Image 1 (tube, rainbow, N blue to C red):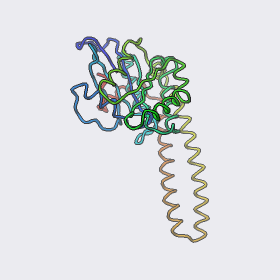
Image 2: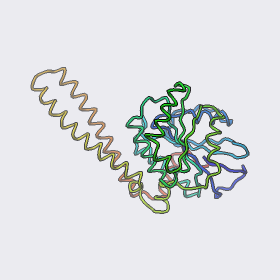
Image 3: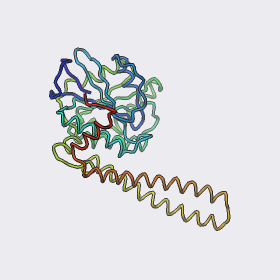
Image 4: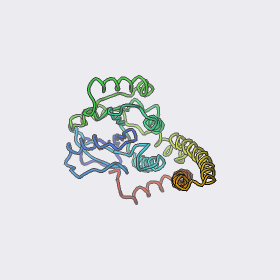
Length: 301
């Protein structure tokens, strides 16, 4: 979220940025809330790229930068990290700093899944421990759960899953899906000292490739784990297919072959993501910025 006091600002001024993401799921509540605050009435779809929305809070123009979340339904974690890295590289090159990060979690989820845990871990590695004091952990979708049950889940999140973030200064908030609620969540971050997230520091100041950043290393470890899992499961499935074929059960053999082909496609996607991350190792900051501009789907503004 970029904020500025004067609408006639220069691009090399300091900016404040908030990048909301939601627990690996497509979020539209905050975006829709801010859409009604602004005059931007276009229909927003699911976040599959970086989207920028401006709104006014008090006398300040606020820029929300909405990104896909990890564990996304349609995008791999590699693709999500690359999109975020491209945008943050462009922001870093223009000296655009952040004042806060809103992390959205649907309180309507009745359990904290593996995907939610992985998404939170990636979020921490991208943001950096030193910047957690600038994070608001906002729970959304309160209209889908009763106050008592929602309160119980909120306590569980604080005590069991968000404890580390809270111990480093992160705050919690409830977002009710309204424009006023969106303003309240964002307003709590506007006076923070501007900062760069850890990914920007590592790539911009440290000149690290994406795969060598803290977030990138986490992705590489996960890809290696997935590849090993695919290899093991494919070997087991191949053995099962051979046994079934020997039993001359044509229906079962055909079903297993279809499943085997799907597993192969999953394996190929994992290998493609590994190649993608390795190719990122030779991409310069300027090349990353040029790639973002060519996509033309978002701008740093």
